[in-house]
Amino acid sequence: MTAPLPPTVARLVAPGVPLASCIRGYMLRSTLDVSLAPAQRLNRFPATPFCAITWMIVGSGELVEPATPGAVAPQGAAVFSGPRTRPCVTGNPGPVHTLTVLFFADALHALTGLDMATLLDTMAPADTVLGDEWHEVLAAVVVAPDDDARISVFEAWLEPRWRAARGATGASAWLPARDWVQALAVRAAATGAGRSARMAERRVRAWAGHPLRTLRRFARVEESLLAARDEHQAGHVSLSDVALRGGYSDQAHLSREARELIGNSPREIIRLAETDESYWPYRIWW
Image (cartoon, rainbow, N blue to C red):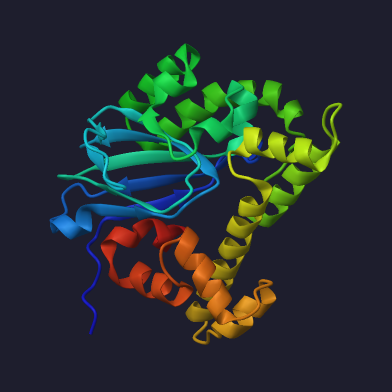
């Protein structure tokens, strides 16, 4: 029999409706008052098309894989993470309480003007990446009394800025990853004087960091993993059927792509999310 997972907090929270086309979601994590072994204090994340800000409300964190000496986030820090080309692992030496906001990369580009292609695999203090305008709200989130208040403070600051910037994206509602990628491709092809395929690809990379082909791979893997999870919870999972419905040639094709972007095959991800505390991001997302 598998040992039960420890009683940590790991939740995914949806953004307010006005920010649904800007923010994909909030990830809440707390290991306060829970005794964890060192291996359970790791946090495993997939490659991703999203950008993130993580606030270290209590405790500290460090980048474990890829090994980066000195990449430590102290208590009170706000850390920016760009779109990632490969899975990564962070670690916490002790109890921790964090709040992470996940942005659609093109939305953050519209808000800041940053070239997302230059931020691939970046992890750095958020105020050095985002600029002085963000300094006050980054600090205000840390000192808010609880997670609901932190989200409220952040959304009250962001909403008018997103309302002003959203015309650059043409987005008006939350989109599944596949639809978001398709909308991004259409907008890139229709924007500006240069409408060649090469110019559209350059726009996609500037707006979202990854090339369009990679974004479509992310969307396809996510859709297939969600389908596999739903079938597993229903008590009958056929990864062959999931792969074919997702547009893969066979189950092996799906597994190869999932290992490259996620780090494990779909079957392994389902098992590890249920049995290994360090896979908590997969448990709340997939």
